[in-house]
Image 1 (cartoon, rainbow, N blue to C red):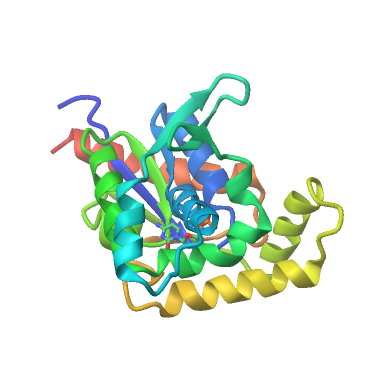
Image 2: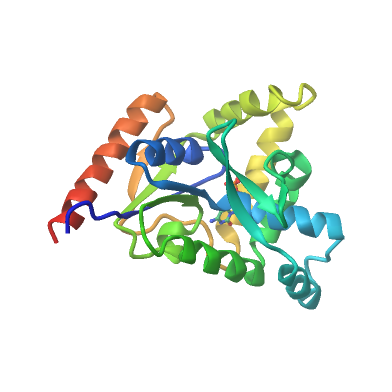
Amino acid sequence: MANQKIIIAIDGYSSCGKSTLAKAMAKNLEYVFIDTGAMYRAVALFFLRAGIDFDNTLDIAAALNKITLQFKYNPATLQSDMYLNEENVEQEIREMRVSQKVSEVAAIALVRDFAVAQQQAMGESKGIVMDGRDIGTVVFPEAELKIFVTASPEIRVQRRFLELSAKNAAITVEEISENLQHRDLIDTTREHSPLKQADDALVLDNSNMSREAQLDIALQWAQERINQANNQ
Ligand code: DC
């Protein structure tokens, strides 16, 4: 069938440029971009506001029943914002107090089941670029294209610092470095769907690559997989 759409799964560590790449790919291919980290962040925000004990399974299940997550297009930024129960939380979920707790929340099996079911539903008609930690391994193990993005720890800290210090002048490099190390450790060692490279993922180390060069490579890979899907 001509114009067959594919699923593109992008995984990697925190702050290695996954979202930037995923957004640019989606725009170029006219696909839908889905930031799954935002979903875990919105759940973490709800839990923090409600004072949920992360070890209390009953409270967690009850809280998840009260959560509706939606992505809504924002014409001002030309991007989708994360909505938690009809409230735009796009800014708040990026704050340090959420970043400090989100990995713990994302390690909870009930939370993962809740998020993964919604992510799989979003990919039913394909034509998506989804970024996260377990997209190529758990959410869409059959994705036509899986990219595992990496960058050196120093470059990741530097990029995150530039991004966050623009909004928060008090933030320090040490604080960011500690937060990234803390999240990497939890994300890679948790029991449920830890971050790992899928066997059939293509690795993109962007430490010394411009955004444009990175996008060119990824789009080339995507085009190859789209052509394959159309020839099947
Ligand atoms: O990509 P991010 O930094 O916004 O992700 C926030 C947290 O959510 C991160 O610590 C790992 C977790 N996460 C996950 O476990 N699985 C995903 N698919 C996406 C994010």
